[in-house]
Image 1 (cartoon, rainbow, N blue to C red):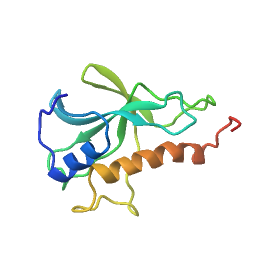
Image 2 (tube, one colour):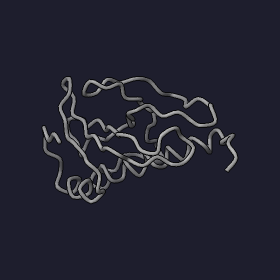
Image 3 (cartoon, helix red, strand yellow):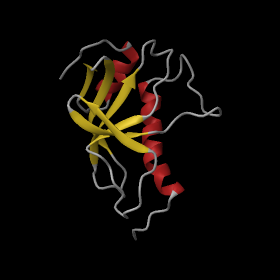
Image 4 (cartoon, helix red, strand yellow):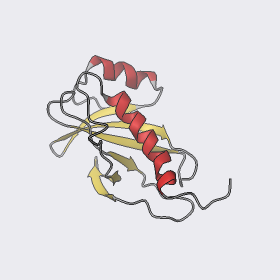
Length: 138
């Protein structure tokens, strides 16, 4: 697995604790953390995906924004997942979910990091079915 750049030690410890394979890659002038085999909640076409997080210059002062998934996720009930697009990363077509922090949930320098952003990613998986309730019987 590639480690093209260094992350803060707290992020490395957290990522290693997940028990999933992860990489830190440079691709087309951008830095990405790829977490493989990340679990997806029930209701999607896949149980696990690779999650990509774009690491901006200045991280961890600069926030992580959005999340990118490979392969692309679809809802089993056929409803669209809004605000998505395609982002090529390491030669694969990742599905970008345009989800952002808000004024009531801003990036907190010194507190937020990859672990807190992945918590948001898991929340976004569930939030998708709160915004548009699932049409599949349990």
